[in-house]
Length: 288
Image 1 (cartoon, rainbow, N blue to C red):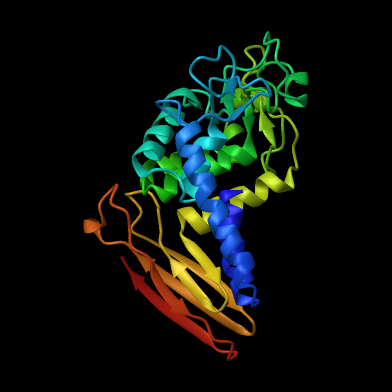
Image 2: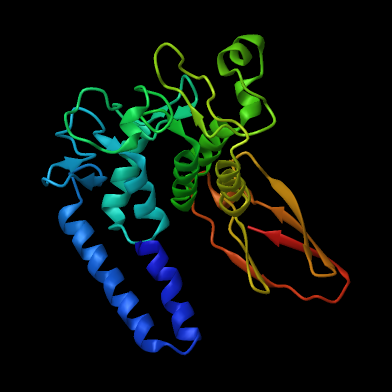
């Protein structure tokens, strides 16, 4: 909601509706203040509250102690307190990233015994789909939030976890994953009997978010109107890469070079370029 209000308020203003824009902006600020007051749990943001006021996604919970959504969107929305949001993401890396099995959990531990009703999610077995497995939509948001923090090595490592090819590099991993290597799984199980097994494949929503994570946040190539912004968060050992982009009848070839002093964890400042539809081929050298 906070991210949506941030995006829609200027659109309302551009359409000549300043009052609506002001209402949305004010509501956004109120939501941010309320989230910081009521949502912070000490090391991460809580996910929600039950009708009786019991928190969900809190350290006091025996199930769903931490949920990735509240942590990643504290970064993606730009609304989270800077220090808290970074602490929250560190909690994600410690509690929800399973490096040995290369999966990123939605939350942990899964629902199994709680007498409260979190909704249909509890209908799945523990560690299956949204109930404590990897839900790839949310895993993509972990990658995006990590890239926004400028953590170049970690962002690419987490991105590689999502790549289905990496789950089928040998017979053992292929037999574990049990899905196609050329399409994305909407979920991967963390259930002990089936850890690493892919669930719903050909999941276009998740693949769309993975594509955005790779192009817009790892490569840092973002288009808005007739302007390109380049702000790469590629691994420290990358020295260059290239992107070709069609804009109308024009073609733009971007050759991106990263100098050694860009630093392994130093956040790179964006560079912006104008696009023109003149039917020509444009070659642009970008140095960071």
